Figure 1 (cartoon, rainbow, N blue to C red):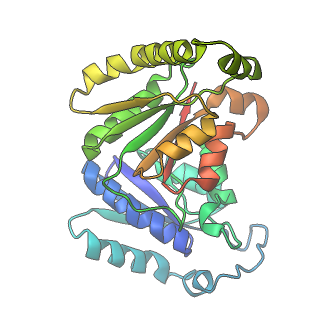
Figure 2: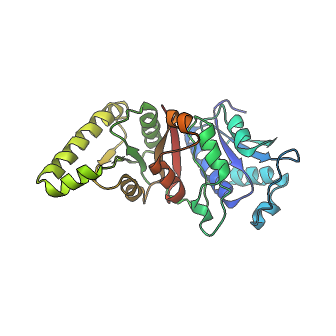
Figure 3: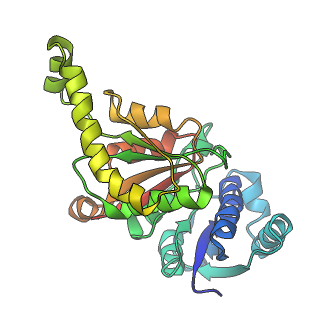
Length: 287
């Protein structure tokens, strides 16, 4: 197996199959290999209730990896694909298998009428259990391969790891990078914007200046990437949602220090996008 690869988790669900197909395109774009992993919890693990989705029952045997490999080879005949069948706790085992990969892509095991828009327990645990970029797969993700890359920018955090990822993604895809101000206005500031003449434009100008200072060094490093900064003064979640309606990928951050202090948690914007964004979401762990 190539030392540089992306790992995609398969559990027989429609979500994981969607994630694997999207991941195959990503690996081909990078010129690296795809590693398909199926984790069997095994008889020594705690029993799990039967999954009510019929496709899970039909494809939980040894044919899963073989069928997925054949399907992806049909779509990407030149792609190097390896497959691993492992045993253990799915999230822990997937994180271990993805230790040397560019990013793990777990499928979702969520249920219900909006299952395709929810992030299941395996994907959530994988996000918390690795410092690699994670892109959970969901059946409802849009497939806008030519859309922009969207990133929420926090002007109070200079996160080079997040900036490097989004500029590299936009460069590889030869697409627009849409950088959206991801901060929220305090109640005092929101009230001031309504009552004080001119403060609205002053605030927007100040935010634009700070965003420019954060993005300009990366613009210089990636001159081929067209950057479209946006800084509307609305709730941060709404701003990023609106900007990502036609996105190929939405990129958000997860603070490693916050997770260490408070357990497996992500910020409010990241949590909302993971569960409700129509576009695939990449979660980048940062200090």
